[in-house]
Length: 463
Image 1 (cartoon, rainbow, N blue to C red):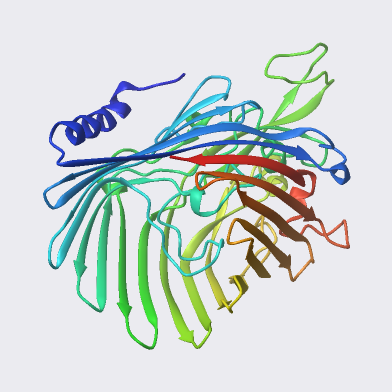
Image 2 (tube, one colour; image 1 turned 60 degrees about the vertical axis):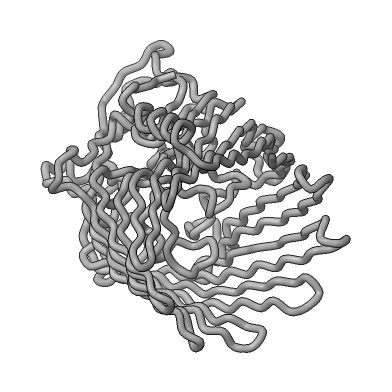
């Protein structure tokens, strides 16, 4: 396993302090085993295993006077070799079969009006359900897609959070000295890799082998990130304002065409070709700013949720075709173009009697002054709906959720049944289904995932 002793020193230090000086120590954990199979209509992945993981997760909480020390980590065995690293929060074996992820490790102190949290911490922003709008401060594990949970995909950031607390308000200020990117599906065994780095007009694309092929910001104070949140809690509504100035968690790729001649099988899993182009990829992270707000308004049995995020001059990835044309014609290659972006959400929650929970959302995403060389569309919008019902004295939970791309009518659906065998053991069956839309020539929001439709069997034990 690729390790760096300096990355593990803070973890060992916190664990040692928590055991030597603690007045009370609590340990909780879970073990999860899951396997996912491609459904028959996926064609390319019919009957293939798309997921195979055993995950041990543990959390230590130690209480020392007014302070709390929290350490949360995961040890993962991946039968597909699908685990990827980002160089900061995940240590991964060379073949991607084992990973150690330090999700959180922080010291928490809370006084009468002030609170301080120092260390690796997960920050959740916004009122949206499973949709990223203002929730930009914590990066995500983008390498985990099959039967994944949005909340569990968040990664910790190394930050200092100072909070002002009153009965009706909370104000948080963050200083994030070290940038933490999202984890990308760069491992050879990850089924997402061929989707993100697919062929371009028949030209083979070779993704970065790992995070070291992607240029990251230097560890300098000028590259720190800053964030601010102010929340007010009233009888009419809960309202929050957000500000973030930092780095986009996903890099912007540069596509580099190379003329190659293959007369025999080459290394790096490259097939036999004759006088063709291949495309290698490098990447670089770029700055971004976000201004946001949200509100949750109770109305009887309903809760109305509103959320909006504005990104001034955000970078957007340019297409591989545009970059190659620019290189062949001798023009300056731009990996991204800067445009203003606005994302808005309106949602409704309803929890009637009888164990029902319903959530509906509409999301609109606009890139102003859009250009054809940008990889995404200028206007995207979708609707989501989720329904949950508990049965048999709350031992059985049935869930159905879906998202519909309202432009090209591609869609995603997840069906899940959870049964509590005991208070500690839960068995689940999860079906993920993707539809590319009625027009195969139009690329919708979920079109690329049509070959990842799958059924997953999962068992989890909490202790």
